[in-house]
Amino acid sequence: MSTNPYGDHGNKDASITNPHGKGTMSPIEDTGPAVPAPGGPFLIGDTMTGGYGKGPNILHECTIAVEKGEIAVIVGPNGAGKSTAMKAVFGMLNVREGAVKLNGEDITRLSPQARVHKGMGFVPQTHNIFTSMTVEENLEMGAFIRNDDIKHTMEQVYELFPILRDKRNQAAGELSGGQRQQVAVGRALMTKPTLLMLDEPTAGVSPIVMDELFDRIIEVARTGISILMVEQNARQALEIADKGYVLVQGRNAHTGTGKELLADPEVRASFLGG
Image (cartoon, rainbow, N blue to C red; front, top):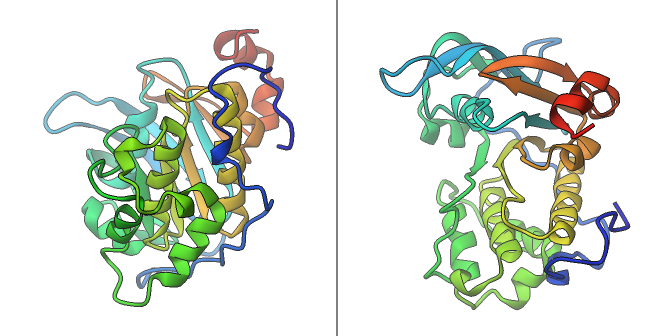
């Protein structure tokens, strides 16, 4: 997106912008021994039913899928189970029925830590950086699972988010909201994920910063990394989505491409303000 459709207002945090256009992040190699399933999605949370601990089910036969290099967006009203669906994919709640598969491998019973080793990167909505550590130390922490040289990946993150290079020795807690989100995404990218999951990445940032964050998310997807994103700014998120899922009370209500959902009169009336 090259222009700002949101007007001249908000916190003009232009530091989030990559002035050099498309970055140079290399396609990330798959992690783990997963065997591809011919014809199946790269990631699928298939008819997931489940909830937290021994509590009631929050998800009800919910299906979320994303192909290699796609951007899939989960939207819906408050309390619809959007973040819960993502956490189910990441192994943070009990999937009592259904399955989660990554690159053809059933990972339903794996812990979140094991899923990171399989190629999943997860950026939670809050508490997603170490505020007392510098920017560079945060990125180094993101590479905790790696035993190889991380310098090339760190350089890729700095090319994607140039302001982080300038502030690499500054405490992350001193950064603006948009810059903190860059640190959080960059730290997840340091694991060299094949799937990047973002929970409300634009929460609390101004419209112009949101637009620039979405530009960077598009750029990451172009490298071949799959993106699964929960987003409260539904209209803007669907504009960049290859695939969209509208959830209501933990169930799939509407599924389609971003353009299809934006053009659907029922979706527009119920979830996009007409």
